[in-house]
Each structure stands twice: as structure tokens, then as C-alpha cells.
Length: 352
Ligand code: ASP
Image 1: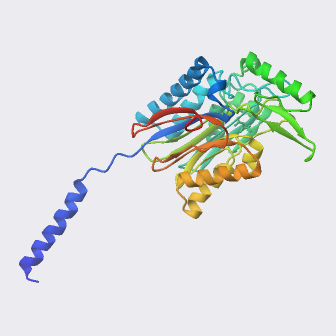
Image 2: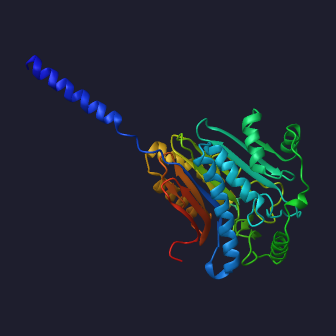
């Protein structure tokens, strides 16, 4: 090759490199997915006015989180903003409007996880924390621990200057009626039909089983402009729960998980099964070790829950902005708002 030819080739290569460098990188996707619980959510059972209320509350929560992300905020802040909105709504089983335990008291669980740092914070069985997800984040950021429970968690909150609220703040008439239904059904030895959270004894297994028609737990997974993932879940657990029962929501890896390498997950459903199937981490592990795409991993894990006899669903989001919202119940309150323009709320099974 002559010197002239070599120079021309070099110029061509450099030119190609420069052209490539000048091509603007595609914008990074960002957005969030939210759920407000899964269960027997049928169009026929839901009056139009109530359906509109559920949708409005979910949309307001999505919008709050999306605004954080659009303004360049972190996935963690977006999860917090979204979950706080749903905790403040009396419609959902988290914060105000949470279900009542067997003693007629609201006991709240929540968790949050940062997929960038793999740090997490959670609280279980608190009775006086207005926004449990906020305290979960404080456990993550201001304590050396991951999970605090009951009076100790509230003592930690007080040490940070929180104002404790009376338990009555969380209690609504609707939840009191549901507890009464569950108690009546329990006294008759059968689950209450059409209501969330009857407690049922299965004679064959000799075990207490929670029968849920509808779960109202709330959760959010978010991806920010920097490519970081976060997940958060908040709940009152299950109606008529006893003996300090804690569900999957505050258990890292069961109801809540986030890792930038794979995905962010928040679950809702019959917590005992979700703990046993280690649901949120199972989805992430399928992606990491089996190289399964998000949707396949999430569907496979929900199938495992179903095989155990459990019901519920998850919302999941990966670092590329792919989303999945599988569930094995007749419905799940869910929605997403993404930088691609996708912005939707769904309540029922597809096609129903
Ligand atoms: N998973 C929650 C629990 O078992 C209940 C729910 O999702 O509504 O505590």
C-alpha cells in the first residue's frame, strides 16, 4: 500500500469514527410502574364511580413519581413520592385505609430498596407511623440495620423526630366492616365470600390459612435517567392477621427487591406464599443466572407461586425500561408511566 493510499484509509477510518461519535446517543429510558394490590377484582363487582376513584388515585401516584424522574430525580425519590401518595389514600391497604388485624388495629409493613447500592430498609408491625415507606427509607439511610419491627421501629422514628399518629388515623369504616365479616366467617369456620382477608382453618393441613379475595397493598418500581432502579412496597398486611404476623412486603427478596444488574420488583398477594417462593429475588436471579428476559422471568416466578397454591402478582422493571406486570388473580390494580409515552392504568385481566 502506497503512503497516499495509507493516508486516505486513515482519513476514512477517522472520519467514520468521528461520524459515529457525533451521532447523538438515544435518550435513556426512564419511568415507573405501580400496583395497588391484586385479587378478585371484577368489572361486574366494581361500581363505575369507585373504579374511577381507584384509577384517579393510581394516576395521581404515577404522576407524582414521574414528575420526580422527569425533573432528573432519583428512582428512590420517585418510589417514595409514589408510595406516599397511595399510603395517604384511604382506598388502598397501606397507610390510611390499611386493613385491621385481629385486635382491630392497623399494623403496617413497608420496604424500600436502592438498586444502585443494593441497600435496603424495612419496617414491620408499626402502628403509629403516618408514612411507613418514609421510615423504611430512614432505616436504610440512617441506621446500620435493614429491618426494624414494632415498638423498636417506632422508637427509632421518635429518635429522628417523627410525630407518631394515633392508630385511629389509619382506620376506616370500610376496613372495620371487613374485619367484622372476617370474624363472622371465622366463627362459622369458613372464609367470608367477597371480602378481603377472611381467616380460614384448613382441617386437612391443620394450619391457619388466610383467604384473600382482594389484596390492596401498594408498590412501585422506578428507573431514573441515570439508569438506576429502585423498588418500594407498603401494606397493612391481611385482614384479621394474628400473633404479630408479617407478610412478604417488608421481606427483602420476597415482596421487594432492586438491583441495577437485573430488575426492580414489588409484589402483592398472599404473603406466606410469596415468602416461601422468595418471589422478588427469584425474578432477579432468573435474569442474572439464567439470562431470562424480564417478562419471562416474572411470568415463571408467578407460575411457581401458583404451583404452591399462592395467588397474587408483581410489577417489575429492568434497567432498559422493559416492564412486566404478571398476576394469577382475576385482577390487579396496576399502571405505568414511561418516557416512551406509555401511560396507562389497568385493573382487570386483559380482555375482561
Ligand atoms: N402481600 C401482602 C401480605 O401478605 C398482602 C397484599 O399484597 O395485599 O402482607
